[in-house]
Image (cartoon, rainbow, N blue to C red; front, side, top):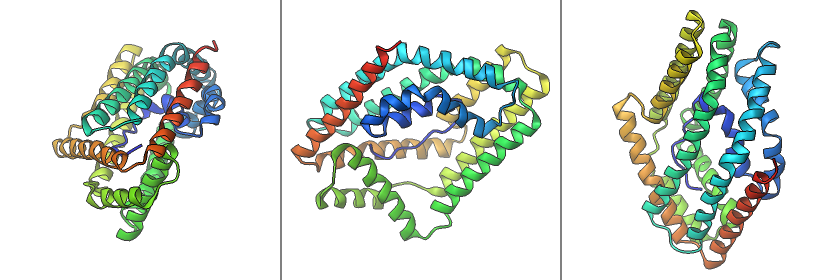
Length: 293
Protein backbone atom coordinates (compact mmCIF):
# COMPACT_ATOMS: atom_id res chain seq x y z
CA UNK A 1 0.00 0.00 0.00
CA UNK A 2 1.55 3.30 1.06
CA UNK A 3 5.33 3.62 1.33
CA UNK A 4 6.73 3.15 4.80
CA UNK A 5 10.19 2.41 6.25
CA UNK A 6 11.28 -1.05 5.19
CA UNK A 7 12.98 -3.05 7.91
CA UNK A 8 15.32 -5.57 6.31
CA UNK A 9 17.22 -7.63 8.89
CA UNK A 10 18.50 -11.05 7.99
CA UNK A 11 16.25 -12.48 10.71
CA UNK A 12 13.27 -11.84 8.47
CA UNK A 13 14.66 -13.69 5.47
CA UNK A 14 12.53 -16.69 6.40
CA UNK A 15 9.27 -14.76 6.18
CA UNK A 16 9.83 -12.31 3.34
CA UNK A 17 8.70 -14.91 0.84
CA UNK A 18 5.29 -14.85 2.48
CA UNK A 19 5.09 -11.07 2.40
CA UNK A 20 6.05 -10.99 -1.26
CA UNK A 21 3.47 -13.65 -2.05
CA UNK A 22 0.74 -11.72 -0.29
CA UNK A 23 1.49 -8.68 -2.45
CA UNK A 24 1.61 -10.56 -5.73
CA UNK A 25 -1.24 -11.34 -8.08
CA UNK A 26 -4.03 -13.04 -6.18
CA UNK A 27 -3.99 -16.07 -8.46
CA UNK A 28 -0.31 -16.67 -7.64
CA UNK A 29 -0.55 -16.57 -3.84
CA UNK A 30 -1.35 -20.25 -3.33
CA UNK A 31 1.36 -21.42 -5.72
CA UNK A 32 3.94 -19.07 -4.20
CA UNK A 33 3.14 -20.06 -0.63
CA UNK A 34 3.24 -23.78 -1.36
CA UNK A 35 6.70 -23.25 -2.85
CA UNK A 36 7.81 -20.94 -0.03
CA UNK A 37 10.14 -23.43 1.73
CA UNK A 38 12.15 -23.95 -1.46
CA UNK A 39 12.02 -20.30 -2.51
CA UNK A 40 13.11 -19.15 0.93
CA UNK A 41 15.92 -21.71 1.01
CA UNK A 42 17.33 -20.45 -2.27
CA UNK A 43 17.01 -16.86 -1.13
CA UNK A 44 18.77 -17.62 2.15
CA UNK A 45 21.42 -19.54 0.24
CA UNK A 46 22.05 -16.48 -1.95
CA UNK A 47 22.99 -14.57 1.20
CA UNK A 48 24.96 -17.24 3.06
CA UNK A 49 26.15 -19.75 0.42
CA UNK A 50 25.08 -22.71 2.54
CA UNK A 51 27.31 -25.77 2.60
CA UNK A 52 26.30 -29.35 1.88
CA UNK A 53 26.41 -30.01 5.61
CA UNK A 54 24.17 -27.02 6.49
CA UNK A 55 21.60 -27.42 3.71
CA UNK A 56 19.66 -30.51 4.92
CA UNK A 57 19.15 -29.06 8.40
CA UNK A 58 18.05 -25.71 6.97
CA UNK A 59 15.60 -27.35 4.56
CA UNK A 60 14.15 -29.36 7.44
CA UNK A 61 13.87 -26.25 9.62
CA UNK A 62 12.17 -24.34 6.82
CA UNK A 63 9.67 -27.14 6.33
CA UNK A 64 8.83 -27.06 10.04
CA UNK A 65 8.63 -23.27 10.07
CA UNK A 66 6.16 -23.09 7.19
CA UNK A 67 4.08 -25.95 8.61
CA UNK A 68 3.79 -23.92 11.82
CA UNK A 69 3.11 -20.74 9.88
CA UNK A 70 0.42 -22.37 7.75
CA UNK A 71 -1.43 -23.73 10.76
CA UNK A 72 -0.93 -20.84 13.17
CA UNK A 73 -0.20 -17.58 11.37
CA UNK A 74 -2.09 -17.80 8.07
CA UNK A 75 -5.47 -17.63 9.86
CA UNK A 76 -4.25 -14.55 11.75
CA UNK A 77 -3.03 -12.95 8.54
CA UNK A 78 -6.37 -13.74 6.89
CA UNK A 79 -8.14 -12.03 9.80
CA UNK A 80 -5.89 -9.00 9.27
CA UNK A 81 -6.80 -8.92 5.59
CA UNK A 82 -10.49 -9.19 6.46
CA UNK A 83 -10.13 -6.17 8.73
CA UNK A 84 -8.29 -4.26 6.01
CA UNK A 85 -11.00 -5.14 3.49
CA UNK A 86 -13.72 -3.92 5.83
CA UNK A 87 -11.93 -0.59 6.24
CA UNK A 88 -11.15 -0.25 2.52
CA UNK A 89 -14.81 0.05 1.62
CA UNK A 90 -15.15 3.36 3.46
CA UNK A 91 -13.01 6.18 4.77
CA UNK A 92 -9.67 5.37 6.43
CA UNK A 93 -7.95 7.91 8.62
CA UNK A 94 -4.24 8.04 9.46
CA UNK A 95 -4.55 6.42 12.94
CA UNK A 96 -6.46 3.49 11.42
CA UNK A 97 -3.76 3.06 8.78
CA UNK A 98 -1.05 3.12 11.46
CA UNK A 99 -2.90 0.50 13.50
CA UNK A 100 -2.98 -1.80 10.46
CA UNK A 101 0.78 -1.34 9.99
CA UNK A 102 1.43 -2.01 13.66
CA UNK A 103 -0.63 -5.20 13.50
CA UNK A 104 1.35 -6.30 10.45
CA UNK A 105 4.56 -5.69 12.37
CA UNK A 106 3.21 -7.89 15.16
CA UNK A 107 2.71 -10.73 12.68
CA UNK A 108 6.28 -10.32 11.45
CA UNK A 109 7.59 -10.21 15.03
CA UNK A 110 5.90 -13.52 15.82
CA UNK A 111 7.26 -15.15 12.66
CA UNK A 112 10.78 -13.85 13.31
CA UNK A 113 10.70 -15.19 16.86
CA UNK A 114 9.62 -18.60 15.57
CA UNK A 115 12.44 -18.57 13.00
CA UNK A 116 15.05 -17.51 15.55
CA UNK A 117 16.04 -20.97 16.88
CA UNK A 118 16.86 -22.27 13.40
CA UNK A 119 18.98 -19.23 12.61
CA UNK A 120 20.63 -19.42 16.01
CA UNK A 121 21.61 -23.03 15.33
CA UNK A 122 23.00 -22.07 11.93
CA UNK A 123 24.92 -18.96 12.96
CA UNK A 124 27.82 -20.58 14.90
CA UNK A 125 28.41 -23.06 12.05
CA UNK A 126 29.08 -20.34 9.49
CA UNK A 127 32.59 -19.90 8.15
CA UNK A 128 34.51 -16.64 7.62
CA UNK A 129 34.06 -17.21 3.88
CA UNK A 130 30.28 -17.37 4.29
CA UNK A 131 30.23 -14.17 6.32
CA UNK A 132 32.35 -12.51 3.63
CA UNK A 133 29.80 -13.76 1.06
CA UNK A 134 27.02 -12.17 3.12
CA UNK A 135 28.92 -8.89 3.29
CA UNK A 136 29.37 -8.88 -0.48
CA UNK A 137 25.64 -9.49 -0.91
CA UNK A 138 24.88 -6.62 1.45
CA UNK A 139 27.31 -4.41 -0.47
CA UNK A 140 25.64 -5.25 -3.77
CA UNK A 141 22.21 -4.37 -2.38
CA UNK A 142 23.60 -1.15 -0.92
CA UNK A 143 25.17 -0.23 -4.25
CA UNK A 144 21.78 -0.64 -5.92
CA UNK A 145 20.17 1.58 -3.30
CA UNK A 146 22.92 4.17 -3.71
CA UNK A 147 22.54 4.12 -7.50
CA UNK A 148 18.75 4.48 -7.36
CA UNK A 149 18.44 7.07 -4.59
CA UNK A 150 21.75 8.93 -4.15
CA UNK A 151 23.71 8.94 -7.39
CA UNK A 152 20.63 9.47 -9.55
CA UNK A 153 19.31 12.92 -10.36
CA UNK A 154 16.53 14.40 -8.26
CA UNK A 155 14.06 14.03 -11.11
CA UNK A 156 14.90 10.36 -11.70
CA UNK A 157 14.70 9.61 -7.96
CA UNK A 158 11.30 11.23 -7.72
CA UNK A 159 10.14 9.43 -10.87
CA UNK A 160 11.20 6.07 -9.41
CA UNK A 161 9.46 6.71 -6.11
CA UNK A 162 6.35 7.93 -7.93
CA UNK A 163 6.28 4.83 -10.13
CA UNK A 164 6.61 2.48 -7.16
CA UNK A 165 3.89 4.31 -5.23
CA UNK A 166 1.55 4.21 -8.23
CA UNK A 167 2.27 0.52 -8.83
CA UNK A 168 1.51 -0.35 -5.21
CA UNK A 169 -1.73 1.63 -5.24
CA UNK A 170 -2.89 0.16 -8.56
CA UNK A 171 -2.34 -3.36 -7.16
CA UNK A 172 -5.34 -2.67 -4.93
CA UNK A 173 -7.40 0.05 -6.58
CA UNK A 174 -6.91 -0.76 -10.24
CA UNK A 175 -6.00 1.94 -12.74
CA UNK A 176 -5.65 5.32 -11.06
CA UNK A 177 -7.21 8.49 -12.38
CA UNK A 178 -5.58 11.92 -12.56
CA UNK A 179 -7.08 12.90 -9.20
CA UNK A 180 -5.26 10.06 -7.42
CA UNK A 181 -2.04 10.57 -9.42
CA UNK A 182 -2.01 14.21 -8.39
CA UNK A 183 -2.29 13.24 -4.72
CA UNK A 184 0.53 10.71 -5.04
CA UNK A 185 2.75 13.27 -6.78
CA UNK A 186 2.12 15.68 -3.92
CA UNK A 187 2.80 12.97 -1.34
CA UNK A 188 6.14 12.14 -2.98
CA UNK A 189 7.07 15.81 -3.19
CA UNK A 190 6.29 16.38 0.52
CA UNK A 191 7.93 13.17 1.78
CA UNK A 192 10.53 13.38 4.53
CA UNK A 193 12.40 10.50 2.86
CA UNK A 194 16.17 11.09 3.13
CA UNK A 195 18.29 8.65 1.15
CA UNK A 196 21.47 9.52 3.06
CA UNK A 197 19.83 8.87 6.43
CA UNK A 198 18.35 5.61 5.18
CA UNK A 199 21.69 4.52 3.73
CA UNK A 200 23.53 5.24 6.97
CA UNK A 201 21.09 3.10 8.95
CA UNK A 202 21.15 0.33 6.35
CA UNK A 203 24.94 0.14 6.61
CA UNK A 204 24.79 0.21 10.42
CA UNK A 205 22.44 -2.79 10.44
CA UNK A 206 24.63 -4.70 8.03
CA UNK A 207 27.79 -4.05 10.08
CA UNK A 208 25.95 -4.95 13.28
CA UNK A 209 24.71 -8.26 11.95
CA UNK A 210 28.03 -9.26 10.37
CA UNK A 211 29.92 -8.42 13.57
CA UNK A 212 27.51 -10.44 15.70
CA UNK A 213 27.85 -13.41 13.37
CA UNK A 214 31.65 -13.21 13.46
CA UNK A 215 31.57 -13.14 17.26
CA UNK A 216 29.23 -16.16 17.41
CA UNK A 217 31.47 -18.09 15.03
CA UNK A 218 34.60 -17.08 16.91
CA UNK A 219 33.41 -18.40 20.28
CA UNK A 220 31.37 -21.30 18.85
CA UNK A 221 28.41 -19.95 20.76
CA UNK A 222 25.75 -22.13 22.32
CA UNK A 223 22.20 -22.09 20.96
CA UNK A 224 21.03 -19.98 23.91
CA UNK A 225 23.84 -17.44 23.45
CA UNK A 226 23.23 -17.30 19.71
CA UNK A 227 19.48 -16.77 20.13
CA UNK A 228 20.04 -13.97 22.63
CA UNK A 229 22.55 -12.20 20.36
CA UNK A 230 20.33 -12.46 17.28
CA UNK A 231 17.27 -11.31 19.20
CA UNK A 232 19.20 -8.18 20.22
CA UNK A 233 20.09 -7.58 16.57
CA UNK A 234 16.40 -7.70 15.69
CA UNK A 235 15.58 -5.30 18.50
CA UNK A 236 18.19 -2.87 17.17
CA UNK A 237 16.51 -3.06 13.77
CA UNK A 238 13.09 -2.16 15.14
CA UNK A 239 14.57 0.40 17.57
CA UNK A 240 17.80 1.81 16.19
CA UNK A 241 20.49 2.83 18.68
CA UNK A 242 20.78 6.05 16.65
CA UNK A 243 18.34 8.56 18.22
CA UNK A 244 18.38 10.73 15.09
CA UNK A 245 17.29 7.76 12.99
CA UNK A 246 14.55 6.83 15.47
CA UNK A 247 13.13 10.33 15.13
CA UNK A 248 13.36 10.14 11.34
CA UNK A 249 11.73 6.70 11.33
CA UNK A 250 8.81 7.88 13.44
CA UNK A 251 8.29 10.92 11.21
CA UNK A 252 8.38 8.67 8.14
CA UNK A 253 5.85 6.27 9.60
CA UNK A 254 3.50 9.05 10.65
CA UNK A 255 3.74 10.62 7.20
CA UNK A 256 3.17 7.27 5.51
CA UNK A 257 -0.07 6.75 7.44
CA UNK A 258 -1.24 10.24 6.55
CA UNK A 259 -0.27 9.71 2.92
CA UNK A 260 -2.24 6.49 2.68
CA UNK A 261 -5.30 8.17 4.19
CA UNK A 262 -5.00 11.00 1.64
CA UNK A 263 -4.65 8.63 -1.31
CA UNK A 264 -7.56 6.47 -0.12
CA UNK A 265 -9.72 9.58 0.37
CA UNK A 266 -9.13 10.49 -3.29
CA UNK A 267 -10.39 7.15 -4.62
CA UNK A 268 -13.80 6.55 -6.16
CA UNK A 269 -16.43 4.10 -4.84
CA UNK A 270 -15.55 1.76 -7.72
CA UNK A 271 -11.87 1.85 -6.84
CA UNK A 272 -12.60 1.13 -3.19
CA UNK A 273 -14.81 -1.76 -4.22
CA UNK A 274 -11.89 -3.08 -6.28
CA UNK A 275 -9.60 -2.83 -3.24
CA UNK A 276 -12.13 -4.77 -1.17
CA UNK A 277 -12.29 -7.51 -3.82
CA UNK A 278 -8.50 -7.78 -3.97
CA UNK A 279 -8.10 -7.98 -0.21
CA UNK A 280 -10.92 -10.52 0.10
CA UNK A 281 -9.25 -12.55 -2.64
CA UNK A 282 -6.02 -12.61 -0.62
CA UNK A 283 -8.00 -13.55 2.47
CA UNK A 284 -9.74 -16.44 0.68
CA UNK A 285 -6.42 -17.73 -0.63
CA UNK A 286 -4.83 -17.69 2.81
CA UNK A 287 -7.80 -19.44 4.45
CA UNK A 288 -7.66 -22.09 1.76
CA UNK A 289 -3.93 -22.54 2.33
CA UNK A 290 -4.41 -22.73 6.08
CA UNK A 291 -6.87 -25.58 5.63
CA UNK A 292 -4.34 -27.64 3.65
CA UNK A 293 -2.18 -29.40 6.21
